[in-house]
Length: 227
Image (cartoon, rainbow, N blue to C red):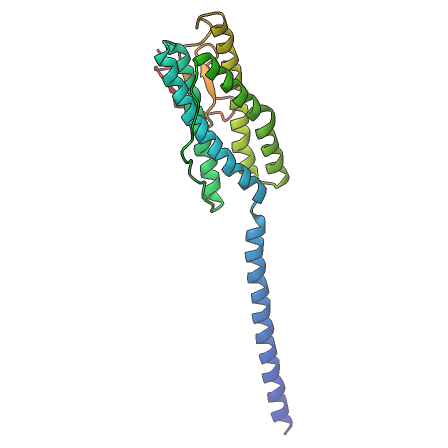
């Protein structure tokens, strides 16, 4: 009789232990799923998607500005617009890659409409856009990514932000030159870092990108940099 009781107790213990184990496993699984969802930097991803769309739009807009400048006989200015367009495209690609790493979709740019005016007016509009990105948009994005502990997002934002500063400087230089009725102050050859989109003119070209340390041999340029 005693042995029967012990057998029953052992069986009940096994039953409850099994149930407890299953319960604990269920809790761990739910916790892991919840942890995965909560680990995504929600606000930063929203900002990243917005930045992807914006950079894609800027790529297209500056291409159209370049076409307009060419038609207006401003080939040197057109080359600047083309160079900045390539830089913006790299920013968009970098943003898109990080978005995909988080298992999200970057979205698609749909039917952007740009008003193309005279090249001086287009240049002034470019200065306004770059000023906004440099002074407000990207600073806020970077700050939020750091708060959400999303280093990859913060890095792609920081690369873009640093590049926007240079875009603004070059656009202001071109605006000053055109206000004097010529393009003499606008560099003719441009080089773009293929990793982060950093932009250099012939006069400030470096052996390595100061933002991401990519070598000069990886820069996108209109002529061989060794020539």
